[in-house]
Image (cartoon, rainbow, N blue to C red; front, top):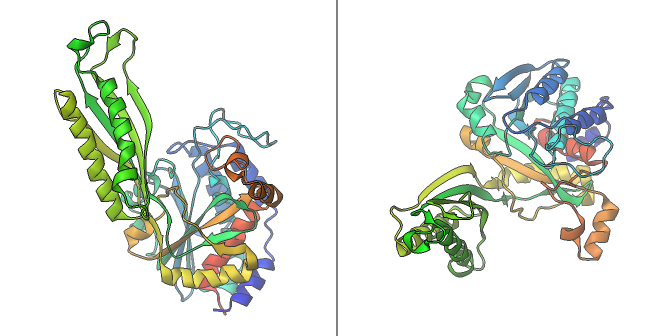
Length: 410
């Protein structure tokens, strides 16, 4: 593989991408929630119709694939997600969301625009590469159901089996920078919904109740001791109680309470040990309170560990180094989670998922110098999250470099 040739191509491919700015602006202005991405899917399909791919839509809801077959060579799948979040935008951008209470607060509009740019380049410059290229546009990543829905709807029967899968995610960091690494780069996660069963009574007679609100409070406190006292300091685990709901009036002790937990890990053994501790604590507190039945614990919204294959990384990273120079840097593990890896896991193939900086370089440098990154730089899912100019270009160049690391016709 000639990484210098790839770098020269990325900078001088000659394909008109002047439309990409308008494409990104439309995406940002018209966000749609997970599993409701009708307009977004139609917009993507409209652009794909002008290209010479085999396009399939409606996979697992609103999922879309586009396949280019261009002679002998590997089959490379590149995935981007396109759903938005229930967040009210507060960026002040002229192209802010026109859908009240919904926002592209995680950069999926960038991901989709970059993949569309990659599609345009791969379509127009088939003289530069050989093999099969698959573009996969995925819905419903934010609820960790999109990849699974596409798989369960027969994804494997609709596209050629890939040899490798690639993807990326924007995150706070200086624009123009691509972060990559072998091994775990994003955490595994699960949602745990815990229903506690008590005995209701009038609030004036708490002695006649088994109070699930009090029980829930005790469980919240005890759960925080699991990571601090049962997980080794050199391991990583997060146990967060996102919601606690109980009761509807001030003068009634309810008969149930519900906790919803978010848990994250980089190691499945640590995950299993932590879940055993969580269940032990919850059920022991129920027994201590004398509840009429044990708690119900339901696991959902699983996001598997994003664990990059070393061989794939050693193939892709030199292309990033050649294209971005000092802007190609080692990734630090990110505690966010993704369902991207469900796709390569389904096909039994290796993958690489890298991170792309999306913060104005001067703003980033100022925040780092003042040790105020957390305070001054809006992160993903913030109502103030807005990728800086240049992010789409960086993401597109990274996508081209990653794919051509496998398909470049040297």
